[in-house]
Length: 127
Image (cartoon, rainbow, N blue to C red):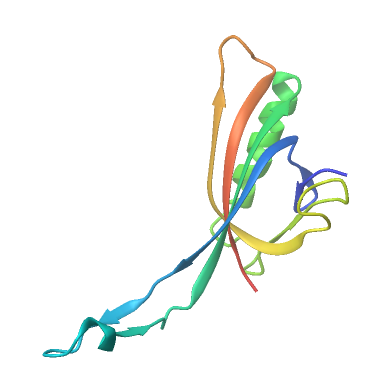
């Protein structure tokens, strides 16, 4: 089984990047050492997931894949509940199933390879 986003197959996934972003508020205290600096994370931590892959098929199949991903970026992102990013047992990380919101989708369609696109899909994990 391959990676899917809301049951849409993501083709051949080449890399998955996980990272976290913490929006820390830093407050230095006048006339004290830097070790006294206060650091708070009022906004919490975000986990970002980036998938880089290749999607192969006829022009109409690739058009459908692109349109499907663009349709998920509808401003409501699944009515506010997000989408499921899942992978099968043969993928790394195995048996991944998390709720995400789409942040960015970009792709390259090479003139010399009309039946293949390489794409990058950036997502934010949500509870």
